[in-house]
Every structure is written in structure tokens, then in C-alpha cells.
Picture 1 (tube, rainbow, N blue to C red):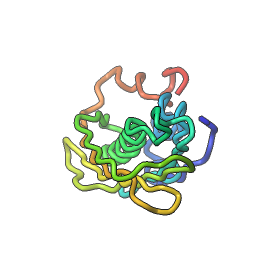
Picture 2 (picture 1 turned 60 degrees about the vertical axis):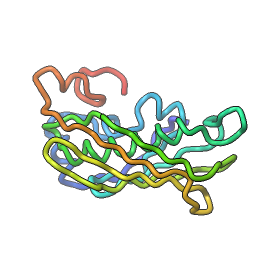
Picture 3 (picture 1 turned 135 degrees about the horizontal axis):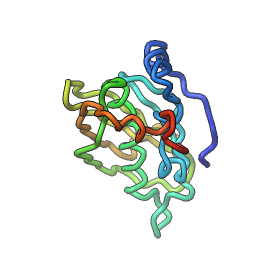
Length: 167
């Protein structure tokens, strides 16, 4: 879990963040919690973010995928989409997460796909569909992020920014 992997980003995004000296894979990653849970980002663009997470290690006492684990995967994917939509001048901060759990999963890998419902100037909303290895819907989530302007000093807080410490 938490292994390094390569995510393909749109070229304009790569150029925008490279000019700021920001490490894209660190900024658009699963973060500390997601890494501990084995979340892996497979594809990242404002139009679609895809990630996977193992069921093993992310279960509740009955041996089923924990609903909170699905929420972590959903918020991670929707936040990455929102950050990519907002660009380097805005920070995405989750303000509302709604998850509906449809079926239990006991093993394997779940896959989440985040697609935009609304992408505005101050908010972005993504629908995240999480499926099991057989393509059956496990969870449907909706995340709304507030997009706020990056203020002086904020850049140092972003993972992957020069001087920000480990991602």
C-alpha cells in the first residue's frame, strides 16, 4: 500500500504546475489517509478521475468494505477533480459529501470514477461511482468542493510545493 505509481495528467496541467515548481504526483495524490488505505490514482483530469482501493484492510467488523472507506475514496477522487478544475490559483476544500451504499463487498478491489456534475468559479460538484471487481455498483457519492483563491503563504501548505515537506 502507498506504493509509488505514475498518473497521466493533461499536458496543460503539467506545464502550469511545473512553472510553479509544484510536484504534481504529490499534490494530486491520495494523501496520507488514502495512502494508508491503499488508494491508487489511475487517471486524473478535471473531466474524469479514476482510482482504486483494496477491500482488504478497509473492512468493518462484519468483514464488509467499510462505508467510511468508500467515503475516503469518493472524497479523494472528487477533490482531485475539483483541484484540477480550479487550477493552480485555487484550492479545493470539501464542504459536502453524500454517500449511498448499495451492496457489500468482502474482497478484491473497488474502483471509483469521478465525473463533474457542476464546475463553476467558486464550487465544483462531482459524482463518484464506486464498483466492485464485477462492475457492480457498490456506492454512489456526490462531493461538493469550495474553490477558494490561493492566498500568499497557502502555497507552502500544498503537498508537493517547494518547502512543504513530505507529501
